[in-house]
Length: 178
Image (cartoon, rainbow, N blue to C red; front, side, top):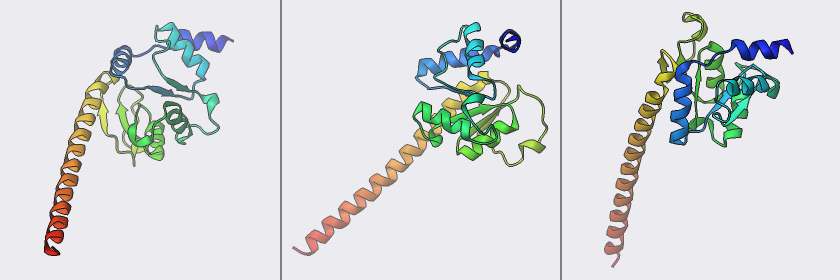
């Protein structure tokens, strides 16, 4: 159909996105696209840009009964990736992306390459980060992973201290009854 030819020919991928997909792939980070575009058109666009196979899961408009801001598309992508929403990061440039992420329980990164909506439609959305373009995503991911590692270390220290206190209390209790 004419729309298929035009959609593929007239759609471009932001140059930083190509590099970001390569970085994510090299790091073993799974990726997905959730869009209102038809999946076969997304696949055609990726193929025309040399990115066929660069994305692990594609959820297109025909794959859902309810579109963004409903979280159905994100939930399907999470299922396809085999991960929980708490382990995911959704990137978008439109308020419906942010609202879908919030409803799916997924952290959101706002990218400023889309239309300027001012602040009104973004009300109620608390992005993890707001970046100028997708090229900043590896740095956002690095910061997130550093924070998670620090949180994990702090939690492990608390568990170790409690375990040591528990062992000390148990040892005292044993010696008191001896």
